[in-house]
Amino acid sequence: MLGLAAAALTVAGAVPVHAAPDAKPLAGTVVLLDPGHQLGNSNPKFSKQMAQKKFNGTTVKGCNTTGTATNSGYPEATFNWKVAKRLKRLLEQQGARVELTRSTNSYNAWGPCVWDRAKQANRIGADIMVNIHADGAPAKDHGFFVLAPGLVKGWTEDVVKPGRKLANAMIAGMTAAGAPPSNYIANQLMISTNTTGLNFSDVPAVTVELGNMRNAGDAQRMTSKAGQRQYAQWLLAGIDRYFSRG
Image (cartoon, rainbow, N blue to C red; front, side, top):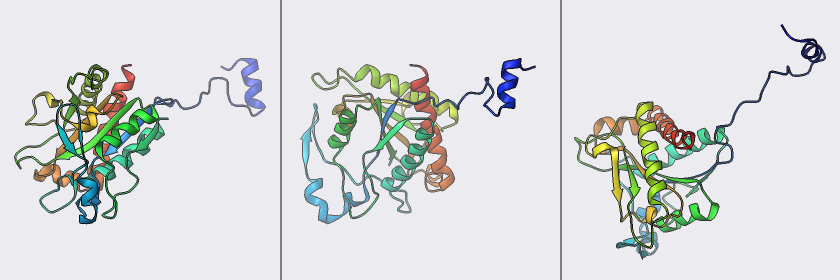
């Protein structure tokens, strides 16, 4: 039974004293999502931009690539873009501030270069950066795995430990939510010392290969709206795991 004071508030039309606003579990967090590649990376008119190269701490690599595609020609860039936009909405519903590394998915646009994508994370003070990709492995391979930064002296000392923590959270959260695990990468984890986007980042960053576009089952999921929603939800589960564990 309500006390007299609470009852009076209710009668007067006020909100009951026990009511509380919906929680926003990611309020105050800043997330940078990188939908890998861009459709225009394959456009010949951008060949000069694509030819740019930089040293990433272990090797000299190019600005960006075209990405892979399903056997029927569905581009990885389009898949990454659609999943990232869905994930952005889900994260914002939980109170996060979210930015994307590109604003279009167009044959008439290129890049940005992978090092500039990482620098964006540094510039906005992102809590994490999640690079969204798909693999182009042999057709028998399927499932997701995560790349985390390895130790490159003078480059990644500050992100190796938090990057591994983020990778482990993504693997645990996504697996628990139902994402099919990789059958060709042990424990769904690959440590990389030559991934430019990871080496240039000064914030915890990972690359998630959501599946293999050359595998019939993965490709069917990747090209459907329902499947793209699933991938976004699985990624959200991983990000939620990271922030909930502190």
